Structures are given as C-alpha cells and as structure tokens.
Image (tube, rainbow, N blue to C red; front, side):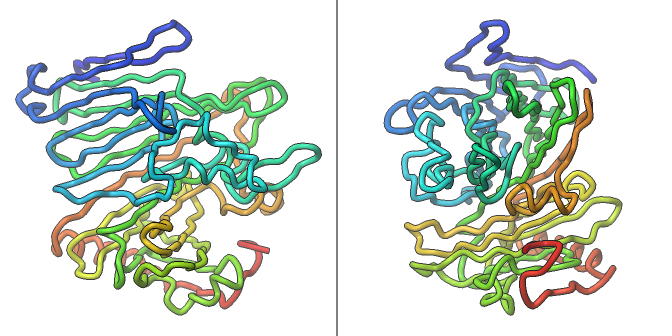
Length: 388
C-alpha cells in the first residue's frame, strides 16, 4: 500500500472521539483529489438527535454512512439523481434509542428503517421467531448497533481511494460472538462504491451467523414501467401473495396505496464467481446495479413494495447468505454460516449508478450473456427448499 492519510473519528477502546470533521481534497497534495470531500457531523433534533453522519463527495457519486446505525448506508446521489427511497419515518436516520425491535410483535425494527442499504443479521436476518424464552425480532440487531471504531483513509497515490472504515460488535455473554469490520471505498469521479464486510468470530467456540443486505431503491430508478434484471437460475414466490404477481415479477407498476408486499427468492448464475443485479427505469437511461460474489452471498431476494408514495414506494435487491425465513428453517436447510474459532466470513458488494442509455444497455447485455448459461426455472408456488 502506498502513502495514506488516516483520520480516526471514533475509537471507544482508546477514548477517541471527534464530533465534527472535514477534509477537503484541495488540502491534500494530489491534484486528482481536488473536488473531493469527507465530512462528519452529529445530527440534532427529533428522533435523529445524536446520530453521526459521514458524507463522502467524489465529484461523481456522493454517499452518506451512518456509524450510529451499524455503519448503514443512508443515501447516495449521482448527477443530481437521488439513490434511495422515501421512508414514512420522515425524520431519519433514526437513533437506535428510538427503535424497539421487540415491539409490534417483533417487527419494531421497521420504526428505524429508512436506509439505502441496511444490514440484516447477525443472529437472525429474517422473520421473527421464538427460541425457548427468547424472541428474535425481524432482521436482527446489527443495523441498530453503533460502531465502536470509525476512521477515514485517503490514499495519496493512484487510484486515490477514499475509504470509510467501521467496526461493529454483536457479541455478549451467552450470545452473539461476531465483529463486523466494514469498508466503503470509492475513487475520485467514480460512479460506484464498494462495500467490503469481514465478519470475525471473537469467541472461543464456533458461532453461527446470517447476513442479508437490504438495498432499497425508489424514484427515479423505480417507477411504473421499471424493470428488474439479473441472470436468474431459479425464482420462487415466498407465499400466495407473491404468486399473484409471479407473471410480472420483474416489472413494476405505479404507486398503489394498500399494496401488499411481494417477495421472490432467487438463485443467480455467475461468471467467474461474480454476478450482477439491476433495476432500471422505464426509459432505460437510468439504473442502479449490484455486483457481488456468489460464494459469500449465494442467495438473492427480490422485495417489491410499490405502495403509495407516502407509504413507502420501494423495491429491495437483497443478496444474502440465506433467505429471510426464520433462522431455524434456514439452519435445517444448511443456509446458516458457521464461523470457526478465529475464522472469518467475507462479503463484498459494489453499488454502481448508471446514467445514459449506453451504460444501461451495456449492463443489460452483460446480464444476458451470463443468463445464456441457462433459462430461469420459475416455480409456480412456494416450495422447498426455498420456503415452507
């Protein structure tokens, strides 16, 4: 690694804390960094009071990371286009103190749900379930645990990577046992950001882990006539409600107040261990895409929730280690990761924001080439081993 500037913003183990921070590329020597900026501030007022927000500007993609909420990715933008969605929470990002996961029958997690990308896990990443006297709520705890370590790294040599690093521990007596080390990395003028997560076993016995990346997109990429594209191997509707929309699982309608969510469990073809999934608008001149490795994230869920604009008009592209069924169901079918003592599980995903018909068409052609490995098998109803 070449010369790098590092700025530690939070280190709870060494009592380091920086409330406000800004570094401008113009203050660093490389000309390529001019126009770039990394800043951090603490939000005030409403349920966001006390939330830390880190903003990265590159001259291309801009994005905001929330260390207070498990190092989630709150929102992004490129060329004036928002990347994300409008959550009914209104005053987010919501401080974890105002999120009670066990409320509402175990779905209280939704009270803080408004990110572009939120991690679900690590003890459970799907539907709520009871295990003995314990209730595991919807989508787990990791998204509401503040990071204990946060740093900014700027490489002074090409390609001048800008990296946000964070560490979040989900470990306690008789439970958990995993620490997440995440990095968000981009370069000046880029249209993409790469999220690399390393999950380490921090106990003296093997620990189970699940992770699902809940990437959420609304307008302008989601609209009537938008399409989902991926090199699909298998498509399975989660339940009878999803069966109702199976004939058009890859197409989107307009905002529809009262719409009931539809979820499809998928397997994707890959090329060289990598795959891609895309959401494009009706005109085919704007798109968002995820690129990731299927070894670390073998399962994919498509969430369609095209309710009213004020209800949450959104779709989720969700790679994961498993499908978001209750953990016991996934464990029985071999889709829960067991990390050995001192072991690690690594997952890496790149978000690309595409502008212009040529860029969108190029990715569609790439997906079509991978799809040529075989046509998708579309199951007519919920079926094993994907869903009960």
